[in-house]
Amino acid sequence: MLKLSKRSVINQVKYVTACQFSTTKKLSSDLLIDQPKYEWLKELGLNADNDGVFDGSWRPGSGPVVTSLCPSNNEPIARIATGALSDYQGVVNNAKEAWKVWADIPAPQRGEIVRQIGHALREKKTLLGNLEALEVGKIAVEGAGEVQEFIDVCDYAVGLSRMIPGMVFPSERPGHALIENWNPVGLVGVITAFNFPIAVYGWNTAIALTCGNSVLWKPAPTVNLSTIATQKIMESVLRENDLPPAICSLICGGADVGSEMADDTRVDLLSFTGSTAVGQKVGVAVQQRFGRKILELGGNNAIIVMEDGDLDMVVRSTLFASVGTQGQRCTTARRLILHESIYDNVLERLKKAYAQVRVGDALEEGTIYGPLHSKAGVDLYCATVNEAKRMGGKIEVGGNVISRPGNFVEPTIVTGLAHDCPVVLKESFVPILYVLKLEGDLNDAIKWNNEVDQGLTSSLFTQNLSSIFKWMGPKGSDCGIVNVNIPTSGAEIGGAFGGEKHTGGGRESGSDSWKQYMRRSTCTINYSKDLPLSQGIKFE
Image (tube, rainbow, N blue to C red):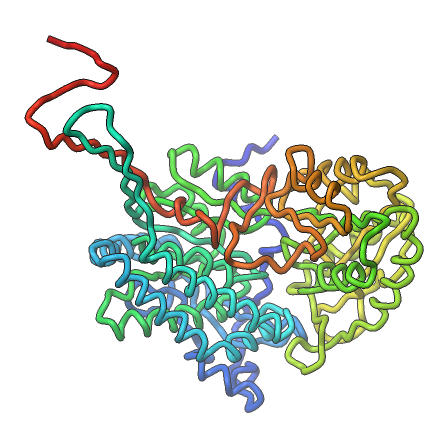
């Protein structure tokens, strides 16, 4: 049997990072960026040929030249000269050198730079949102909403810059002070997935910068243009303030670069967003060097509806949570657990709602459901539908690939499967919702919610206060996000985002997530002339 090295295993990336790009050289006239309809791309600093490495200056990487494709029609957008391991070493060195300058700047002044980044993003919000529609495949309003998340966390980080706490504890020894102090970890590596490249980078970067770290970004290899456009905004703010632009560095590259980041002791904290399978390998690699990590991995999320749930809210919430971003959110609702008394009613209303979903080009006004990001996603959708059918599932709505250019599939509802059916328990990153009939009580529903490997987000619809607090309590949902009467998706930046179990345990964005980007020191200061020992020890 062939044995794979650690690096070889890490390089086996789940389909969500499968290449939605071409390495075939395209004539410039074939590219969307050269068409008048897409002239706006150049307002983001993009060109037909783009450098894929930035460490204070832009340069073409020594890796393959790839062509980013548009999921709505699979037409080429523009080319990127991506980086390789030979580029990586210099990028890390420059980012570490830039950190030496950034760490000396007082936190409130760092917060001012982050404020300016948020302002610069506001000015390009619509353009960046449209770019995400073009390259990622999410509808334009969702793309703009993702940019807004970065803006919001910048606002949050500005406040944090004047509020990073440090405790002062009473010392048992006379003439002594006991202080808790926080310092930046150094270089934060951020590896983002295809579905939320800008927001996830923003969650990490705004907080990391405020805490005094430099940042190295490696995006999924299928969304290089969204990444480069965002990086150019970061660069412009740093240059305007006469700061080393390498404080925020970038390398567009493949899994080999990601593996190197996991192994590299110079990367003081690595934040990885992606599949559970790859995240597990990344986590092991970082732990082997005793490094710090944040893992944001998969989610097999459930909405539970009890007999007293508001059914109008249930239908609207389920539609958004299951169909939004074409089922390609880590927070997508994949299981709908309905109490038997309202099962038929909700199912019929949901089927009607699905039938009214407007499918189209992600950039077209009025579209609420665009294409899957890649052809690999279409293949996974087909395989999952067929698996559900083989196991006895009934296709209530959808189940087919849409015959049109691009990566379009029908949003799908499946019934007739048991709550513990293998296909139900397995996360599928496609727009398939399993509707399950609950013949028991809330305790049974909680067991069903918790029986999957992942523990990202969950939602309960009820008006019963006892049920709500049981759901939130120690015997309730085991997820990192526990919602009541709202969808599983659409988290605000003020709370910590992340999940338990195979979701990875990491936390990003709000609350006290900032602590992961800093190292804590307990400092004892003796300002007396004596040297008493703690615990009353005499050593004379």
